[in-house]
Length: 146
Image (cartoon, rainbow, N blue to C red; front, side, top):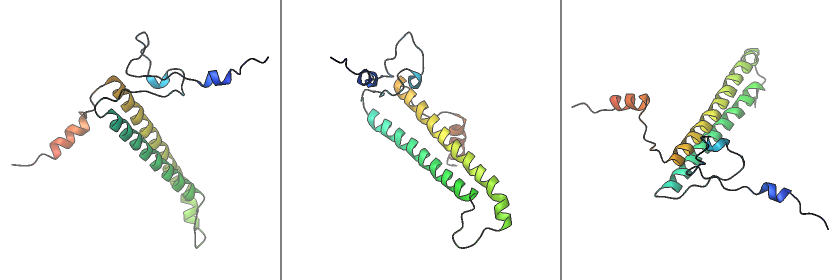
């Protein structure tokens, strides 16, 4: 008689709830083992809507990053439909392509950091009201004059 395969047991992960973390652990919910477990949140008020909006925002950042990477590759291989690239275009293609590639990586990192930060704040039930210096500058600029 053969013993059952350990693989299905290894692939069964308990759901992780960032709203009730282990009190002995102050670890970040995204860094807890197992890494491939679903994050479960209680659906109070508009939580589901907010989480879906956060995911859509991350996917928008991801889409922008992919588009910029595609543009970067197209520039670096000097992609032309009708004519051959000029020597000047060939010389400038690599630096401009690298700039677009770096911008693509920055978009991806920014989107992922924003997503993780927001999910952690949702898990801690912290208000997401912006009150940084950018908001203060915007509020002082947009006040109507009497």
